[in-house]
Length: 365
Image (cartoon, rainbow, N blue to C red; front, side):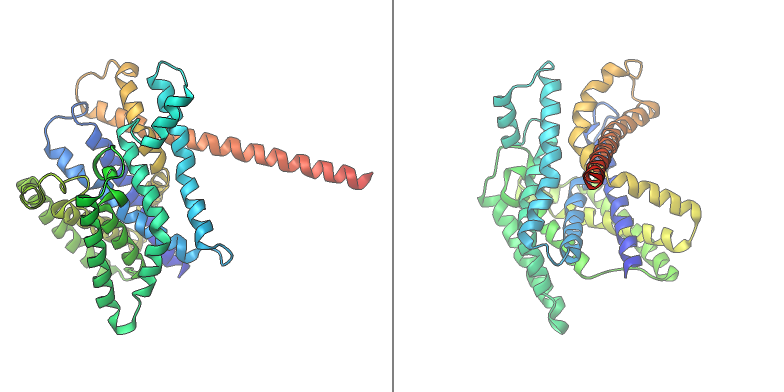
């Protein structure tokens, strides 16, 4: 069981890294490339993130310590994103306001989630994490033996109904996309889908099945991508207007995002089952990077604003410019997080040593 869980986490972390790369590519339009085709291909990013968030929330709730209640779990998970968000707002305000900090504007920026465009994600994520225990209990409730499949379908239908209701009849804050609606609109539906997928404990254990899944996922992904690039969300506009297109996602983008998830899951499973050491190292490295996507997400836009100043020689669009920009937008937040973790461990270690020395002196006295 533990081995399968590790594999699941591996592909989820790999998917997170690919999703954050898609975010960077999406936001790099006009700087790294022109035209809409590349941007359309990257549109799966946020939808994939919320699906994976549903999965990781289910795993976290399922594996939590017996003494940790749902309220304590919720508080812990909320703080894990609130703390980095508070720091990110301070850093962005400092850099945007001529290297000054002002408490009043800072509080307003924090509460409105709109100092940087991507901060709407935090607003949605906080709402979904607050709702996660209830959604988890509903997911568990759907385990009804032979009727499990039917109950899950009913649950998904209810989640879809609530999601569409939120888009049409609710308002959260004037931020961006799904952040304007309670629970992120249709991002709630993807979050619930992620929870149900995790509850199903889907795993590929045999190489032959992994090959079949990889081939099937490639075909489905190609079909979904071809429809997206051909239709250009015209079907969603005809059905929902501008309410459900990219953010929050409509039908086309939801199907496309699910095909991306299936593709990543299948090919990561195939990579693990091949037993190749080289492939294993690549997957492990990608998964390691995927664990830091929150920090890349929070800081990438402010970094992107400064990159033309730092790299004036890279004024023309090129592969080199794309590589340098994407690498820098990933490396700086990850490096900052690693440096913080190292400093924090050092301080805790020093404090523990001081307490130990004090205890020994008292014992000797």
